[in-house]
Image 1 (tube, rainbow, N blue to C red):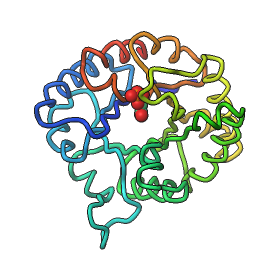
Image 2: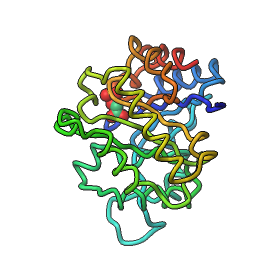
Image 3: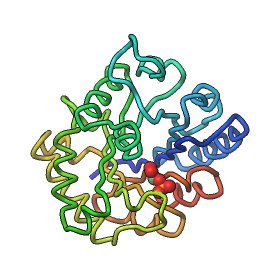
Length: 247
Ligand code: PGA
């Protein structure tokens, strides 16, 4: 299908300048695996310094405000993130949907804000354990996709990340069948929403407890085009095998 694998680390609220050596080491690994697009979404305070060390990896942000500028204390616009050195931004991560009460409408607006500033965007979706256990995961995630998908969504600037909330940081992952079923449902809904050409070109990442042991199996699934990786992206020693699995 010609979709280049995309493997992105999400450092969350981890990382001081002392960790820039890991950024450089991961950047060097990325350069050795040019068939995989590798990135690190670091805390905003590290974007500028990390982008100088990132080698073959891109640096991204973990959020992006919908507006270009204005009275929004503590927020960062896409233009600011771009200027600092970010090429991508994550929007709609479940931790932000929960902690910052971001709605899907907010998330769609943030994605467009990032796009306007020239950022590429990873849009996160995912169900709770309660929703999974009541067999409503697919309906829930497709509704979240419908409500969060920004206008003009296209494969050259947008990627989707399916991240079941109950798999994030828990060491627990869905079965390969469950991942396959969800990714193919997302692909089919994207075809309806943006047309088959764009939908078939758009990367759909899996996220939630991806590690060196499970990455190869997850990445072998038909509609999985890479991963969004939290804990296992913090060091080159842990992230390297995941990049290799994608290659
Ligand atoms: P995890 O986090 O890999 O630590 O589970 C993934 C994420 O939240 O993006």
